[in-house]
Length: 562
Image 1: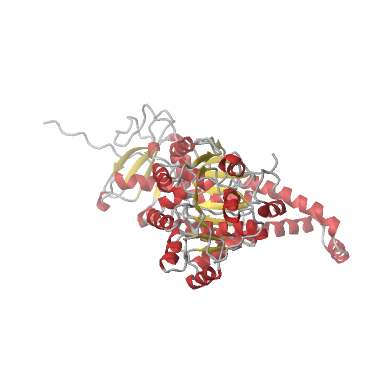
Image 2: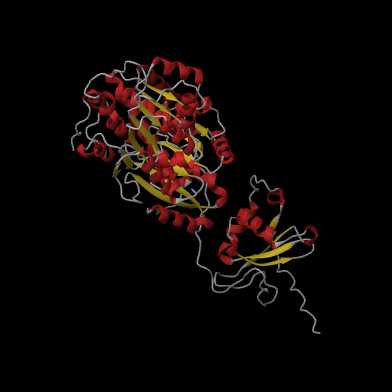
């Protein structure tokens, strides 16, 4: 569809940026029925809403004039965003959009030099974009006068309330004229948002460009079951398998630091992004992503709110999100402005049912697929290498051809090809070998269970169950070290990459403990415990020794009859 009528002062900017047709949210706010009204808008993340509200408030700020004019220099537009990154991003978007009109757009955000912001406000601005706390500071210091504000935009209002900015929002809105237009943009509309809208909006037009719980159509969702201890290895293979920029989510700041450092050690160009970084560090990290010096970012949910990164092709959920809404919000960092994207959820095998509940809560279908294998990545490397070789001949210089002929004389083709393969592989981190992961299984109607007596039988090292004969293992902790199933079971599961359901009888003796592993998991368990234990905060998990038992433990004596 052709771009609907917009303010003539902004049309040249839209044309220069190549906007041939509007996104749904842009078309909705430019509809004749929305002109001049308060708006309550919900739209998918990455749907072009910054340009949408920039176009929507233009008639209010400019009137019919092609150039902005404000004799007293006080701002007429105010945009409030939840985070520094989002506010700075909005300021950049509005700057190019309003450039033909001469309207000045400035940002006021926490972590930046407040004196410089005060100087910029003193010089005059058409639109001020900022975070709630910093804007309120400027108002209280008499550095920002909101008496002339004609339009206010609350961007990602639900996030601002979630972050505890209600008091700041109300103070700012109370400082603006009652005649202003108020545009509220929110991914969701909980009761707190509707209450805020009822208090500060007048006859607001409700605009929704998506049905409730409709997932983003430009994002492909993939779920990958992994062995719990191989999460980082799966991230390595995903980064090796894609050429696009990646955003990797971890649940905690420590998780971000740990994963980012491990990826850096392997040779990936990665930047961390978490709340503990200073504003200068966050700005440098984002700039590295935008100019291509870094191709992946490891972030927490809070740090990644409102990010719009160019060429972001994949979002990796290294840690499961806390809710379906967080899943959608994280994933929405890709597939923006009409571009396709992929969201990959790494699911530890014991957490598969939890992941499926998250998908159902988010109203989306995910394709279950294994992580990229080392073999698949090497095959893709071969294809890329052949493509590079095919493209060399077209632009080779005479000097390069002479050097190539000299090498052909002194070395054979196979030796030269081997050197080329090695040089090509040396540019990239090596892919990782991953273990097959099994999802959760339905509860077994019978078989070994914690506390069961071993099945009767001679001196065999296993008892029979529906999953084949179980196998006995032992660990070097017993009653003398106060061994207890409550803390032994997590150790066994962690070291052996198994679930609690795959553990059978546990026998605690004086100096050791013997336990059964169901048949289908025994070989996998034995391989896992034979590997050197990875770093773990609990020293016992790292140091306990687990080996295969040569025979079952002796049966406990029967209680004497009285």
